[in-house]
Image (tube, rainbow, N blue to C red; front, side, top):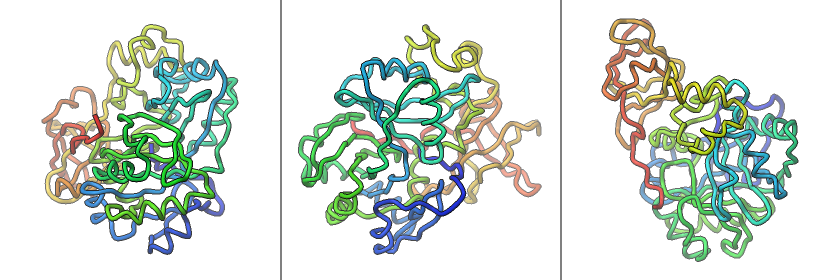
Length: 369
């Protein structure tokens, strides 16, 4: 989730929190067709605050839809290799929309509420996803009148316990309709930072009031896109448009865990044949963690060479890790080079910079268990 893909041309869209961001000194940038804060106090400070306490992110640019009817889960299962029919009420699941070639159209989150499936889409993929769903007989209800907030960090549970006690009892990936600070919300215990936390869908008209109420709590500070990116990279989580795309299979991306045994046996979803081939014989390339030597981060697009100087792959995401105080990256390498500890070289401006394949995640997840 949290895609890097360019958005549509034209004026940037604004979220219901735009005025609040500006009043808090947020530095606004264009992202996937939206005007969003990249930082407030600074990336390092916001990253550290998320790890130590709780940060509030605006995810309102993400697409929000519902699928209705008794056959919605079965219909969606034809388009994803995950288990949607077996998703219990009050639970949500990470899933992948795949195409005929086994590539990833989008990575999505699906929650089951009474009488419907609630689905969160990446911002730049929302129009494509909705058209794809409609072309396969589904009728998504668009929730353009809702905002999406992400409260992330180890103290998020304390805030939710004060403002919405029933929601504090949610397990990881649990979802509920409840009131938060007196405002009706759809809330799940989830996020994309590697930390415990909650994602909160709220009517747009109430979003600024709810965000203000959350920011009034002593543990909470606002955070922007830059900290969200460094956190998800440390957690080894894919970014659509960088680490996964229409030409990447779930197996190449290290996301085969989203395909349960039942779906591997039924093979009744788009792209089943090429995905089954990768599951059976292995892909030619694999997503891996990469630890560059030195202090300089490896940027997206950097070529990777093997010890024998042959081209091995390329970097898809890279940054400086505030938690590890050093650079980390993810990328794709030939399968024979994907073992942890394998030595690589990053080709930067004619130089070979040493690196090694590292374990993912770089920083252990602290999701609620």
